[in-house]
Amino acid sequence: MKKTVMMLLALTLTFALAACGQNNNNGNAGSSGNAASSGNASESPSAPASESPAAELTGSLLATGSSALQPLVDQVSKKFMETNKGVSIQVQAGGSGTGLTQVSEGQSDIGNSDVFAEEKLDADKAAELVDHQVAVVGMAAVVNPEVTVEDLTQQQLVDIFTGKVTNWKDVGGADQKIQIVNRPASSGTRATFEKYALGQKSEDLQGSIQEDSSGTVRKLVGETPGAIGYLALSYLDDTVKTLKYEGVEATVDNIANGTYPVWAYEHMYTKGEPSEIEKAFLDYMLSDEVQNGDVVELGYIPASKMQIKRDVDGNITQ
Amino acid sequence: MTQPLERQKAKPHLAEEWVGKVYTLLCIAFLILTIFSIVYFVASKGLSTFFVNGVNAIDLLTGLKWAPDGEPALFGALPFIFGSFSTSLLAAAIAAPLGFCAAVFMVEIAPGFGRRYLQPVIELLAGIPSVVYGFVGLSVIVPFFRDVFPGQGVGIGAGALVLSIMILPTITTIATDALGALPKGLKEGSYALGATRWQTIYRIVLPTTLPALLTGVVLGIARAFGEALAVQMVIGNAPHIPRSLFESASTLTSAITLSMGNTAMNTVANNALWSLAMILMIMTFIFVFIVRWLERRSKL
Image (cartoon, rainbow over all chains, first blue to last red; front, side, top):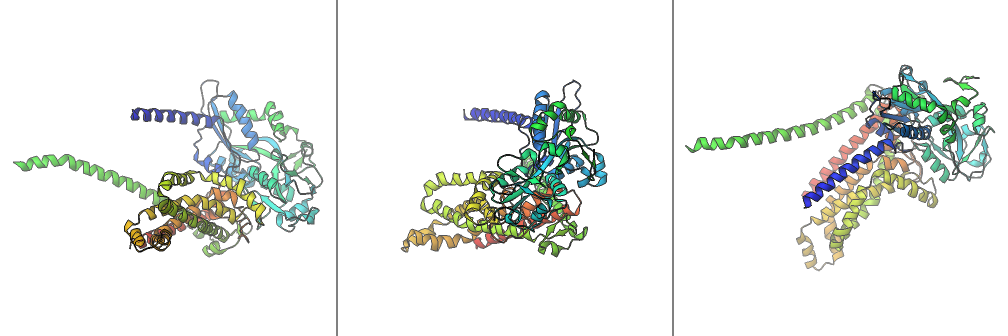
């Protein structure tokens, strides 16, 4: 009797685990801001797209990298999986640097990045990757809602992030210590902010806090008095206050016409030309439905809306 | 006439013995091979920072600035070493008295209740994943520290508190086992001489089991030293030596998890991270040696 009960329990458990495994693959990907995810990405086996004889696509994709791009890829991947039942897509964060390294070494299929590959990888490795610019994301400096400052110039931002200014009263706010919440060096959000808002790299100062995802940065900035950080526009909400940069507000129109300079292309890199399933997913990302729907809804800007273009060296063309 | 019969009976057992020996030998060989491969890999990558990339070992161990991407690239790991040691030692300082007292309560004062209810609860604490501890730390402990103590909330204080809860089960379980293994004659002799229960506990029981209790503490420190995720979420991660318990700091493990994804194999930044991993591994060996030495002392 006891033996049969144990056997039944064991069988039920096995079936439940098998069902769970399937669900996890399809639905619940991309936990935002998981530091272990970069370790996960290298452990999880990603089966390359299988060529199926039928019209329906089957296979699995692993997209890793930028946490600024993650909400968009996550939402679009869910919609893609609804219409293509045989496909399972996993989206993980880890930073643009991680995404580029992993797609270059073959550990993931698609590398999400806020920066051009040439900026992070060696020239020969970057040359192997094919760039797909799926959206444009703006970045803005954010502060704790209780800070009274509304606008910061480039010089003021540089002074804050290099440690010359440590109190809000020196830039027009209350007498409160400035608490910097930074991202680690691999972050594309940090690289974009440093390149276009500060104009220089900033060091990790004594007493600054580093968090590995934009989600955690938003949480800390919202809770810590006197905190300043930087986030992609897709992460902004009521828990943090967005600052203007040089008097220009961070809106979609200001980015599109070029008056607000702190933005970056969102790249999805593949190693070489994309395979069939990757191409299907990327085409779906660039389709009108996604570009005018999810991209705008989540706070990004469709690449087609930009009135200017910018290349890796920062040259602007109309 | 009997001899050939006996020899026939012995043969199947000889084969069995031989198969068993070979199988267990293979298992142990596999285990030793794995351990040596890991040690060799970490050591070769960690040492290549010094021999291939030309970084000075003394600079790594005592330097104060960590900037692998800077110009010039600096590799001072002292802030991380300081952070690791201070969080582990502080965590042990918090958890050791709690663990001892819990063990004493479970074994001496309320053995029935302790064994049925308290021990499963302590083991439950051991089973909670470390990311849960980190998340609870970030959501509950950091805001609490920020409001109550002057400072940022994150830092060595928060890290040590989270780690102390994580190593409490280790210390308590080992202390409980040690206290339970005492010969009953010791306590009975003490009572016969007229000592009260409390006098017996702190004059006879605790001093006798001290080496075993220290073993538990050292194992707890070793676990705290190696904890990565929970610590990274609450410690702030600034690569500097903090000036207070509530200022952003960094440990060896959090430095590795934060930067590992960024670097590519065979670059100097990557090798420097492997050197940090090698330091962690060497510290683990030292902890194991200390534990063995303590165990030998307790047997005497």
